[in-house]
Amino acid sequence: MATKPLHDAPKTRSPGSIAHSRATTQGQWGRAWEVDWFSLASIVCLLLFAPFLVYYFIMACDQYSCSLTAPVLDVATGHARLSDIWARTPSVTKEAAQLYILWVTFQVLLYVALPDFCHKFLPGYVGGVQEGAVTPAGVVNKYEINGLQAWLITHLVWFANSHFLYWFSPTIIFDNWIPLLWCANGLGYAVSTFAMIKGYFFPTCAEDCKFTGNFFYNYMMGVEFNPRIGKWFDFKLFFNGRPGIVAWTLINLSFAAKQRELHGQVTNAMVLVNVLQAVYVLDFFWNEAWYLKTIDICHDHFGWYLGWGDCVWLPYLYTLQGLYLVYHPVQLSTPYAAGVLLLGLLGYYIFRMANHQKDLFRRTDGRCLIWGKKPKVIECVYTSADGQKHHSKLLVSGFWGVARHLNYTGDLMGSLAYCLACGGGHLLPYFYIVYMAVLLTHRCLRDEHRCANKYGSDWERYTTAVPHRLLPGVF
Image (cartoon, rainbow, N blue to C red):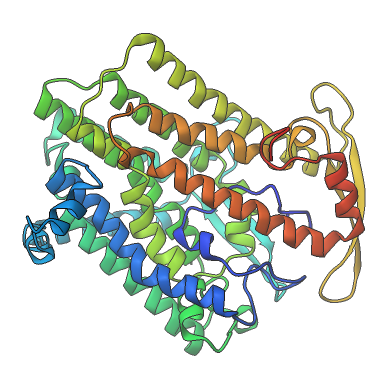
């Protein structure tokens, strides 16, 4: 996929994506060499306010029953001071620190010490040692793909504890949610700072490093392309996939357990959120080998927006629906719940099948059937950074003939379903769909700018053949 168009790659699970600088020219691999003032201002704002935003959402649920306006009104009317809100916020505890250290250590061990065995008995699953794409310096890294195995083992331990072992309460994550937030921030900043220092003084591959001369941009967007310790511990793959995404479903299960403890039942809304988000998580790990060829791995350097984003932003803001339902249990009518489930599954189907069509097309070099027909293509010629000419093909059949990024559309449909499962009582659960719409629209424009630079007039032919990006007839 490194030598193919990446305009249809999946979304990046990190806050920095929405502040990425203008599209880079050919051969620059996802980062700018120079930083304009707008990009710098966006990055500084994210560094300053993204941690505060996460805190605000979690604090609002803890102290104001998930109301986003109540804290502001309290302060504005003099009923509370910022110092009062901070004083009521739980601080880090010894139990939370031990729990978080144990969690991260367990995931590291599952990642580096246990070779994958799932590919040996699961038909169609690609695991074990796999090669990534060629880096700008010409390096082809090898990865141990064992995320599905780590997810299965982790959840097996969780369910064994819940039903037989009783080592800890199933509500342990919710009960330590804010103290764990400080631990996650600590790891996020520590690994981001370490990656920055490593990129300057002892990079894994110096030829794959980038320096802009701007400290804030280097810190956020990363210096080193594939920082590693030893042969197998790859920072980018580990933090993109573990521990945040493995934790996603455990967090939701803990929220469901807390809802049952507080309210005597698990509502169908909570079940929907758990099921639909678990489908997404399992899809991620089932296709982890394919993920090696996406923009996240092929173009992005490892900096704060991945290091902190995957430690804090992902587990704390992608799980807001489950957290909200602990404080506001919602029991949906059967027709409404069925509609939400249908929307989520339809979105997943479009997302997965669009990506499957693209992957099938590339693996067979177009010698396949899309929707029962030979695929239509646009032949392209482009010049790589070394001056060599290459030939490529852009698919204009199947979902890719409907819109240029219909996989994003399916993703947005699933994201909307998570939010709709929470009803219409509060704004907080809907942050996710707003964020994803901004993220994917920005990603869409960023990818197309890169492709326009890469393919030139051939890209114009493609956009003429497939005129819409996300919504046929609209955008």
